[in-house]
Amino acid sequence: MNANEILDMMRKGMGQVPAALEKSVPVDPALIQEHMRSKAFAMPAEKPALDEETRTLIYLAAALAGTSPACVKAMSNKIVQQGIAADKVIETVHIVRLAMATKIIGDAEPVFDALAAATSK
Image 1: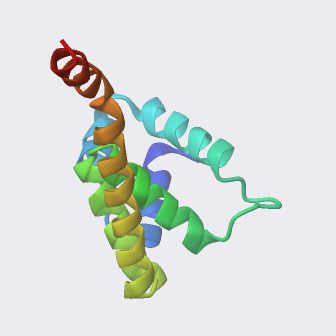
Image 2: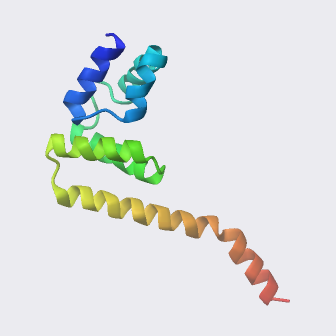
């Protein structure tokens, strides 16, 4: 499949393609082909363990946690294309928010250690 065919397939599946992918094709068409190979590795078409809706919600969660606006937009479009229920999307956002809040508390462990050491002197 050539790069433009991949873009067309992505447009059908998500409504639109992230701008960075569109812009990459004229400069490096092999990049989008490698991206699709990676997608096939991560989300196999044959005997998938997860359904398409779950995959989209996981991808959205990773994009939110990884602060990737282009991926968040792409998954938002895909959510609409797939007709995923709003309550599932909102719950996914809430889970990501909790995970990020938990990360901050975990990352602050050295701060808590320093404060505890300072107050015990």
